[in-house]
Image (cartoon, rainbow, N blue to C red):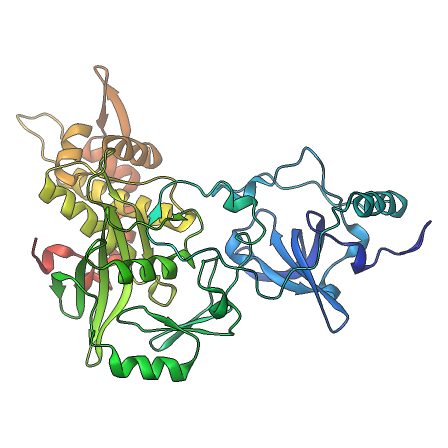
Length: 436
């Protein structure tokens, strides 16, 4: 790039800059527009630049490599020393950034010259980033350092094949380096062992004796089954499961030790075996009485009511343990939607069944709702507030009267019931057999 009023070229775009990227925006409908993005990495292929970008105000699972012809370098914005891109480490959407204005080429020249003199100019990204050691169970804690590490901020796997599905990952997962460089990672859908080629997978299938997850089957209804896996007894399976789940969960951290966890695997049965649909994990002994550590429905099975079924099982187990339960926080954006939907439906159904006594209007306390559902008090309160159905009575919040529920949210409840009805044959645990 020359001095003066020269055109800013893709060579001048480096990590940390914000640039407009031409892409498709989905806000009720598909439309093409310029989207502000932060450059996380760059690489050069056949003398053409490619940039790995994070779209500001959008979920990290949409991060991608884009070609230089989709980037408007003229409107590049240099990184500010005091700027912190919170959208990479929080689930909530941050405020929209200011409109990007063209950067002064002379100022850009000065910045690049300073970076070169200090030896801090970013190097080109490798096509296949290095992978951290393979790890096991997941924690509720944020990976504080991981979000600042350019390696873990970037998707490192192009595609995974699991049974009859090929799935595009959403996030980084620390699979071994020799697999990361492959266009597809092949997984055995019964033991979740990962291999680098279709031929290796076929060879593994001749030796794999599993046709369902290891552990005890604790629930069955039609083609749906749940298996309970002990992280100590089935360490290899548990670690493989966590590696798979990390591809679709960004807010969890991987650790080596799976011993303190139980895993509940949801499967669909056919003539070939029990195929994994989703799972949740929980600590064997939780000091905070959490009944879920991680929960995931695999992408091919999403939007079928399976998430609610996973959540329902977690609370059924809490009822058996005679405890109030709650998922570990923070929840992902999709996790929060699933839990809020389950909590709303469960609590509204209880409110609609409340009867009045001795001529008094029907009422129920929050503590009574907790006892019937095993949902923790703060989750009940937040749900009632979300539904605008909570009122205070003598210092204690009390759920709204049945007549008020009919007036305010009966229509919404009926819509939820209609939505669940299409999959109710396998979304209500009471219709099956739960063995513990």
